[in-house]
Length: 296
Image 1 (cartoon, one colour):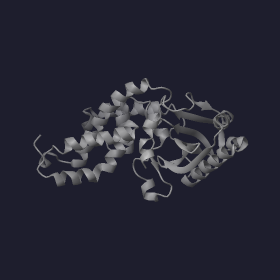
Image 2 (cartoon, helix red, strand yellow):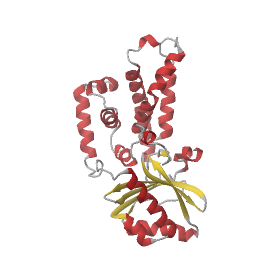
Image 3 (cartoon, one colour):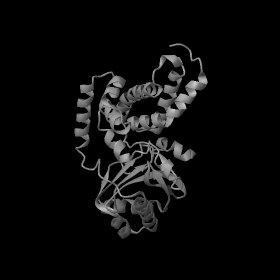
Image 4 (cartoon, helix red, strand yellow):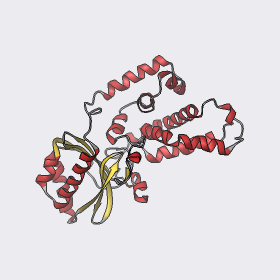
């Protein structure tokens, strides 16, 4: 590759694609930090490409980011297998005061979907994301991954079959406003230590999934059932003789809370909502996954 002749042209082309490329990298990796690092690596390689040597900047950059992200994903899978407790994706946190356009950013993929994507092998995840989220045809995907069109179709069929093992992966969610109201009601009931109110907000088979990474206290194993989740929330406050406080936020475009305990920020909560009740609560407490939230 020759040295870049026009840095301004390269920068403008990359900047125009950045939001889309970030959404792609985040979906492939489930980590904001790793997605940003992938974009940085992609920029360094893109800046060394001669402008005239690339037919389509968007296609070239999509291929570059996909391949860099796949390399990271294959390494990350080994680390995640050794992770202490349950691994959850790194959350994207924005204010509820953000306008609707910001809330609809392309990287606003739910934690539930990201967690399901962890079930897929790297190639399956790449084909699924490129097809479903990036809306590319199989010929484009095949060229990016160095595979045949038929091979990509087969990979997609296997990916869909694996995701279909979870009946909830494509379940329609309640509206954003309904989700926000439920999250706020959950926060208020938790602060009041109102067992009955917490249970009433949760579905009978609700789940609590916590990720402390061995560096923060949380439930190491998933909690199942409204009763157990409510008792857990009340028990944490009673045992430590301190109370929660919460700030409503968007987490990956959906309802969420910033949770403080005794005035100290401890975790991000995200919710799956359906049929007017809370189906699943995700608690991300690993401080390494909250660095961008701390900095916000």
